[in-house]
Length: 50
Length: 241
Image (tube, rainbow over all chains, first blue to last red; front, side):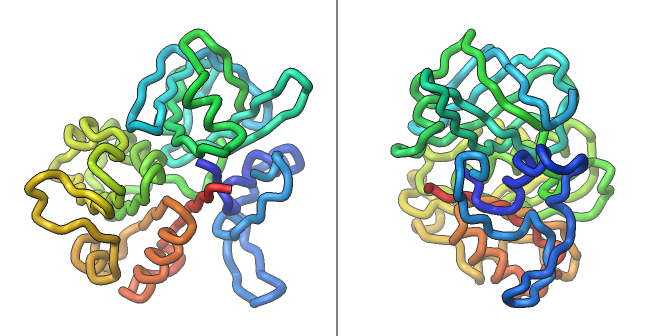
C-alpha cells in the first residue's frame, strides 16, 4: 500500500534527522491543531515522499 | 547499519494472500528485527536509473533476519505491479527500515486493552501487532475489527482464525459479499457497529486504525464521538495515487 500520511515520512526524514521525528508534536499554522507529525496528511510530491 | 541505510534482501518465498495481494518473505543478513506496526521503504531502480520508493507495512515483527511484506496490487502503480507480478524467489529487493515509532504496539505497553480496526490491506501492520501479542504471551485483551470487501479478500485468513484466543476477538465486516450463511448482510462499518463491536471508550483502550484514507478518517471521527480520547486513537492512512 501507498502511505499518504506522516508515518510515511519516517524514511525520507531519516536522511535529514538522526532520530525518527514523526512522533514529534507540531501545530498547524492554518487551523491551529496540535498533532504528531505521523497523524498529518501528506501530499505526495516526489517519489521520495510517497 | 542504521535504519536510514538502504539494505538488500533476498526473496526466500512468495505466496498470493488474495487474488491481488502477495506475501513476500525476504532474508536480510544483519536485520535487527522490528516492532509491530513499523514499515519499510522499498526502492525500485529502472535500467535508466529512475527510482521509485514506496512505504510498505511489515507483517513480521520481533527479532530474526527475515522480513515479511504483504503488498496489494495497485493496477496503475509504479511499484506494486512489479512486486506482485514479477518478483520471484531468489530475486533481490532494496529497502530501508524498520521505520516509524508512532503507529507501534509493544508487549511492554502492558495490560491496557487494544482495539485494532483494519480496512482492506490496512490489516497488515495490525497482523504484526497480533503476532507480537501472541508471541509475547501478553495478557492485554485485543480486539480486531476487520472490514474487507469479500471473503476472498481476507489477508491471512487461516492465521487470523488460529490466533483467536481468550485475549483476541476478531470481527469481520464484509462490505460487498459475505460468506454463505453469514448472519449479517454485506455492508460498511458504521458508527453503531463500532459502538457495539469494539472495546468501549470507558475501558480506555489503545486504538490503532489502518486503511484507506476515507475509511480511517470516518472510523477515527466516530471513535472520538463514542468517547475515545483522540490521543489514544492512532491512525495510518494510505491512498491509491
